[in-house]
Length: 152
Image (cartoon, helix red, strand yellow):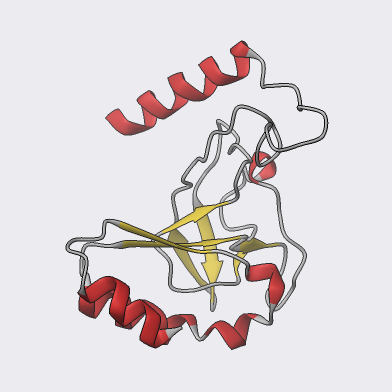
């Protein structure tokens, strides 16, 4: 992975964001995230790095917490560290998300990046039967919340 990241981050101009996805697929230590994060920042210092399924209910746990229930500061733990943001596509964070999470007994601010899909599943197309799309009220609430956060 390191060689591929070096190629991608060296040969294609500025990269503003990088997602590491598939965290459920192998043990956390196997990702070697501190090393990969340092390599990314060395090659692309302004690149924001996020890891899908970052937050868990306890240290060294693999029990993930859904973003719409993350409303208490310093209650949950980061299993992937360091990271510049957290994500869990296609879930939407709670409007009262506190954004404070623990790693090695330290509290860190970790904003959530929304991947707003039209459906509550990853996609609504490419299915035998199309899935229903989100309600307009839900999308409007997300939009208003995102604008308010951006102005803080």
